[in-house]
Image 1 (cartoon, rainbow, N blue to C red):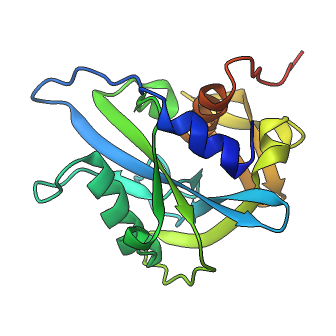
Image 2 (image 1 turned 180 degrees about the horizontal axis):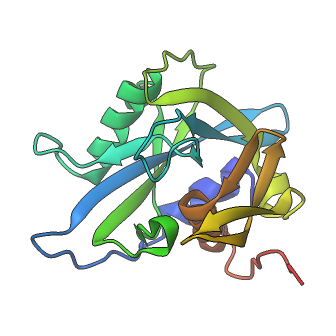
Length: 201
């Protein structure tokens, strides 16, 4: 279920869960970007730049950001933000579909903000031009994530207390957790309804 042929077929028939926003709901979108390399599919992450006051400072994430008034929709917002953040033009990619929307919960606080993940497939080897918001682009094979081979935990402060978080460890410097981890789990469940997250006990 985790190669690109299966992903294309599954997303073509998926109807994502969407929240019913009100006039104060902030809306954002991210791009889940895939590519085929040799016999495996890869998925793209960014490492956000360190910034005081940013609840996602230094986090591993998918490229994306807030919906602007000139965006046609949330898909367009994901594409625009990807171009701005990493210089990647997704108009040349294949759009595979959307997965379930998520609520933002930085540091345990549930915000009136929804995030819509949209999935794209690249066909050519990309080049990147990172802006000030992004420190790195990191590719990871998709299957080891889906099969929980890279699952790990890390202790981070939460409301003044050390708290254990689940996530995926791509390297010593790249730990995928929080909102991006939740979106990955949603993605895997979309592809395989029998998928189960790692047993952490």
